[in-house]
Length: 181
Length: 188
Image (tube, rainbow over all chains, first blue to last red; front, side):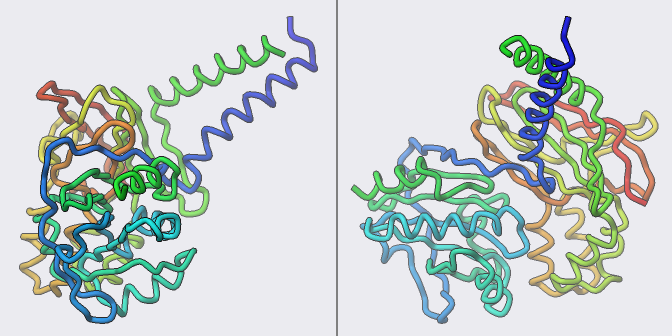
């Protein structure tokens, strides 16, 4: 038979468990994960040749020898927005490790993207590319935003991730760094 | 204390299971939008109401006029989330295989291409159509276990105030699975 103190303790423990369960549903946001899917087949990364914020062409072919994180996103996409800060933290954690991040914006222009980047914390310094006609989506087999691929220095695809991720998670950071060795 | 924690864990687990079976929608206290959610076969599926005004605001900001997007925003739109938490393999779904049950009758959802076909007839800016296309819940997708997921807009094509069941279907290496969200109601 439980006494008053035990009942009180039981209520506190249940309440704590319910609150913890509710955290992931705070504001109705699905949780970001940190798992990457390893691509076991040897698949060359598709072509990617787009303009950056300075209107200069960036071609992924010129980045061979580096690890390239290619992230497809848009400002109106909630999980894309949520993971932007973690992409910058990944960049900061790997900046001396021969890793390049390319954030391929789908369907928007600099007037839309530039103000949004000003709201991201920490402020991103990775390369943003513009695909206004969304031509790269089919070529890269992207069926939803965000989708991310990590490319090895030899140009083959190492990992994929469908949906938002915590890119600053130690697992993702370590996998990215390991590719650069 | 140990007995209390065990009793609490049993209570919490029981409540969680009941919540999944009862599918009582959670209502956002700020917006009033309801969310239905189910976890089955290692897959999480949820639908959150997008109120017509919210949908209108989103698409007007993408470059639509209110008139151009009216047929879509008044068609009972949700934010759908599908996530492979720990299914026994890669899940593969094709959205056109999903169905909606209303008053005992089943009908399939309009595809993204169906909507694009309707919208291109009203002379809309290309950038707005691109945003529309990619804001939709995917037409077909694969999710690896451990957290691949997407969220996107899903119109069930029903008038405001309708009540329906959504049946979502996917396969793992050809083996079919399905789950059902019950008594989902459209915002008025």
